[in-house]
Image (tube, rainbow, N blue to C red):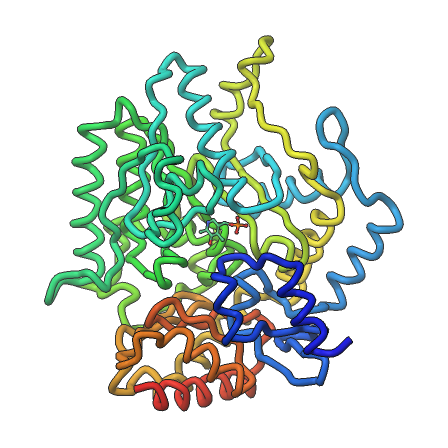
Length: 471
Ligand SMILES: *Cc1c(COP(=O)(O)O)cnc(C)c1O
């Protein structure tokens, strides 16, 4: 196989996702033959540092020996069995371990394969819960401006990204959005925290008026990924939890991108801070500071008055280490019990062929083993601090705006005269052995957790060079 062979055959036979295929007349596909650690290689041995974790899924590098071994072991035992009426060890073990790791009270796991399906399941479960409770009019949902929760029709109806939505608007249920606490939109002199509180007042006004018809509020905790890594103050999560309780609306935490340690704690919801514990007077939250929660203090939701428990927690992407499609919807016993009855129709009705696939569950269990064995959250804390130090030249570059960091996510906007900045940046990065995939003028890093210091230096130095060339 050569690079050229693969490209020609791919363009003839494969319809690639999120792509205007005609673009590939001028912008070549990138052929990948193999991966190892943070590196991807083509058929000539040319390498790329995977700074976006292959669409935010990879945690411990490509071809990780420990995850490979777990999947290989499982292959020799059981590749798959249906989960309706049957059960198996990997799905049970994974459910038990997730219940221990997640915010307290989320003891029931429902499985699917992709993130969008997890969103669909949570929306259906929420509306069905209210129907079982004699409130069948609670069928609408709210989400944040610029939210992203997947692209199947239900998930797209709570996704607020015009590019993904516009062509399909006629197919979607109309759901409302509320102002995003994204601190880039704070007023002059307004802190990230004050802005988050102001946005939560708007949420309150909306709930006050419409709660009778609203089933759930769905939110990406701390970082809105597809909005361009928009970050916001954790006090918003605390207020959202209080308001949803007050107005009898479910809170769905979509941690598909931010879960599994990405924001510094295992789940972002753990960082929701009550007002009284918020940072120093007029604390500016995440703004420009590269603030990281101390992993010791941030862990253990519920304890120490920190963290919130959503009604539904959605996990996917990193859960299998980036190996196999797997998603989970975790929920509370209170919700579970409302479906537990003699009538079939009161039960939750959602079927998916590959629910709880044993190979994917083993990959997830191996991933959780690595978190424990390598003390990953603490190690990441040090790595992120190192990265923030060496990123100073990038943060201070005069055409870079809003440099920000949460856990193992970094992002900034580039003031560039090029309208096609994202494409140019992507192409220049490839020449420099980097896989970057800017969203508009926002460049972000979301590297696998196994990235080393030399690789971080290379990432910063070369990205700065690319930014200089494009400004
Ligand atoms: C990626 C993502 C999804 C959708 O997951 P898929 O597996 O791509 O369907 C949903 N929500 C968030 C926050 C995501 O980042």
